[in-house]
Amino acid sequence: MNIKEIKELAKRFSVEELELCITETIEKGENYCNVTGETLEVINVLAKAQTVRELMEQGMSEIEAIRELARRIRKVQGAE
Image (cartoon, rainbow, N blue to C red):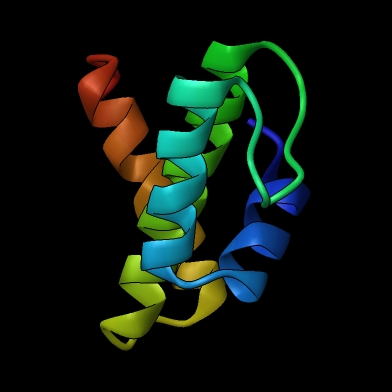
């Protein structure tokens, strides 16, 4: 997980803009958020940034939002 890229995207774009970038990546293979790479990896990074942004808009600090994202990932992977 590229934390630096996720943090930058979460700061620069709104939840709606990140959703649009995910949709553009799926439909066109490119997006205006300028995230490049394998489609699955791009979607993964954008979705993580979107989650961090949502948490920040709910009042969490950036670091709290990143920690919560990591906790959720571990939970889904069965590490918790």
